[in-house]
Length: 280
Image (cartoon, rainbow, N blue to C red; front, side):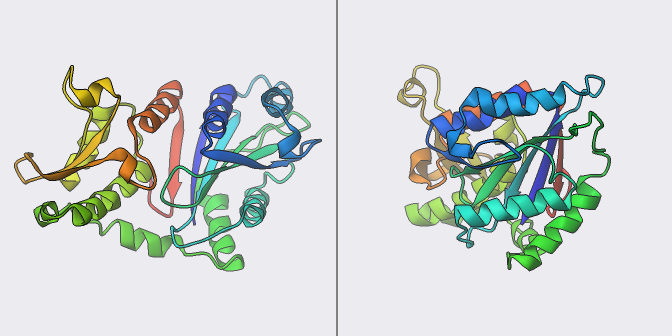
């Protein structure tokens, strides 16, 4: 399991990000912790207001929103009930078990993962320190959960992903080989880097001989808001068969990327901490 912690002062933006996924059918709010109603009985305002009321108890603390994603190996098949239990165990381990929290299961990537929205402002108005939260409490809890729930360990995943090599030009000779090679790079980059434009995304993808192509001005790809993924040779030239974004099961489409861009843009001061895969 890999835990990623974001802290910010923009609760509404974080909520809207997750609720947008829900509206698109890419997510489900699977549990509401320390809420008066079950998750499926809550509307957006009820979800938001419960946490906002707690934020109002401490107006001095600006960084008051905690947004965590728990990421699991693609081989793991976890039920909603299991994901909810893991999320509760994680929150308890980092000292947030008394906090109001919403857990969203996201289904728009090639691996199981949940997003947890909560706050570090306690019911008495005091705050939970976020200093070294990821390095200390989160890292310890992550390791305990991996053992308790029999999960694939982050160290194993780290060894696999960071040995990832640039796509070989040989992959360009067949569509299936190309698709598999590009998918390996895309999943790693989309999970492990923060970006706000296609240019920034390509800056990373190009290091692995892959390019995201939205077409030239006036082209059919651009008009249809499409995106193709291509293999590049050592000189940066396009080679082989391009693959449509919709052909990948985790749907790295232009529309889905724009949601990521918007979220990152709306949170310019967000601090991103990644443990198990190093710090980004």
